Image (spheres, rainbow, N blue to C red):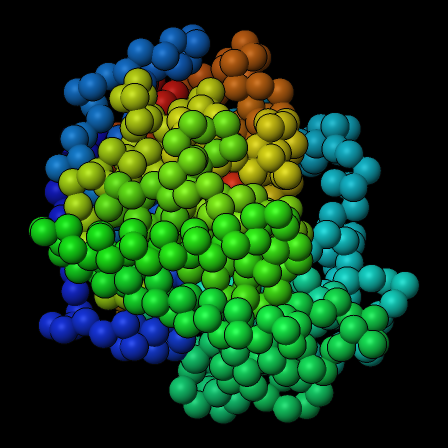
Length: 579
């Protein structure tokens, strides 16, 4: 393990400090985002496609060595690298595992007879699913049910629409990371417009199909075809959606009133102002605190504007959501994540946090947005945002105040230093760092666990193959985004062991990681993996960590489910490390 530990920790935080331009312009960054705002991968291993491509990343397998096999929670401080050495991207920036040890040559196929098969796990899941959970996949295939990033066709309401009624084709990024796509996506859902989805790669993580290049020569996303006419900028798309799907035809209006025109213009100008202040601070050094001061001053202006409608429901226009809220939502969401991670500046708090009073109106606005299914389906988590922004922007600059929060978000340490933030049992609100999503399992762990298991079961073979890239070979050519390697090849020799580990993780999610029978199964799996020799063990560790680090929100699952899966994969890694 020493070679792997060294390789994982030796690389510098390249994408957190690197700048690709000598001078910075908010207008330049705006154009960069418009062209390539999106994910690090061409698709998700959790989808239903036949070939599994890549998602986002953090802490490596070697960052874990705590012994929880018998319920102990002690932490081995010598095994957890310091932040100076710890690099979530290190194992990728420094080359995949084969560059250290070569692929595994031992195949453990057929050596895990005691682990429940996928079919048995499906039966166990179905026995505890709610009726609505059981209908998720059937509804998804018909374009119905609750909104999901997995929808290719979205009919909203079977009683009102059929596929022949779809007038919109929405071209968005594959990993659900693009802020401009998010605005359009929210508006489609909030207005109740049926649409089809075409997923397009960003340049930083993959190639765009020629058919899309003909449709959009610049390659920029989002794009939408509405009633046969193509629109190539998010603001244009949103304007046409409001005009083409009016309230008089049964669609919800999200426009501002004529009497609110001046307010809307002022608010939209302020949105550009805070965007610029955020970009200057996030991507630049700030020794004198000037950039921080400018951002805080602008955020206080936003707070003032939200307070003007304090008697409303929390939205910018008070009692209802409008286009103004959509324009702010995608970037305020990213500000809350990135400024905490890179700068140590917290603007979003959980409802029960005393410190949330620093920006109470802003937090009420976040609370109001999070009641909307149209926002819930598009919302990402801090971890995903903090790793998707650097390759889009050319780098984000870290400051010392951000380091403790970065450790929490990366899964390395809790804020109080008691252990890994991706260890079981999970802390509520990540210890006060990121509010839980109570609408989808934040306060119901079993609901979140069932979602994680469902996603694994739905595409298990491809997920195993995808995870095994951790012990495979790097793809050529590579892409700017360090976590994307769509041309990588899997290590076939570790797939049987990885498959057994993931089946045991599903068992732990369904029956409890601390149940004696579950721990016994994981002990058996770890012992069998160890029989393959050191190279095989290293390959399995790297593969499980590879998958854990690439669970994307919302692309693969919602945050509560992602937190449970990441933590349960760490639970499995600990058994293998301890064996």
